[in-house]
Image 1 (cartoon, rainbow over the protein chains, first blue to last red):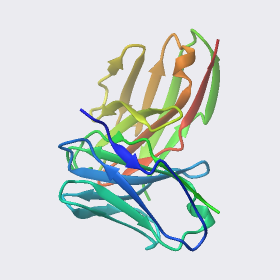
Image 2 (tube, each protein chain N blue to C red; image 1 turned 135 degrees about the vertical axis):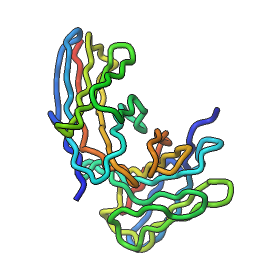
Image 3 (cartoon, rainbow over the protein chains, first blue to last red; image 1 turned 60 degrees about the vertical axis):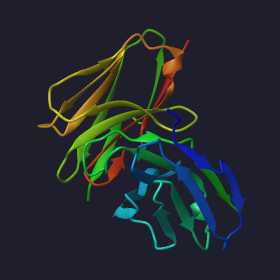
Image 4 (spheres, helix red, strand yellow; image 1 turned 45 degrees about the vertical axis):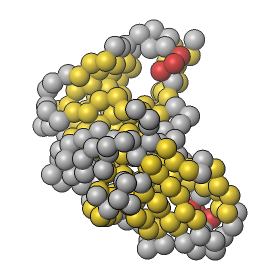
Length: 115
Length: 108
């Protein structure tokens, strides 16, 4: 079974631009969660989508948004990029919503650099 | 506010040593605690713990949860250089909170 895939793997943008990241979960998984990982803050939860609905949201500004499609693929969008948005963005998929005990499988991440 | 704290922040040991990594949590409506290993890429799943006192084992790695103490430990015996990584624990209910991780370096 193929793992979680994320595209692109690397991205360089400038301040003020916007970016869209994509995540394809493991086949059959309906939950996709997004995380931001930085050296200073570690892994921080952004949001979770389950069956095309945002189930949970972390403490990030409204510039961070996402959506999930009927095939469970998910996209994350960051508008008006700031230097502090430079990070590794990870998505993770699971069979069930994270509200139920389950295991998350992570993708390789998208390394975003904002100049 | 929910939080997960790991200790130590970093650890350097020699091959063959045994290490114990700690994770404490304060989360509302606790459901599970998960351990991950992260090398240069995405975290890979190690263990999921939901019940107190039941040890989970996988080769040289083992982990146990103590709900009374709101903590968990991850043990690695007979460490190898390939165990060098950041070990993350996470917990949560409807969203997973991660600790900042323990960076383990195993010297040959």
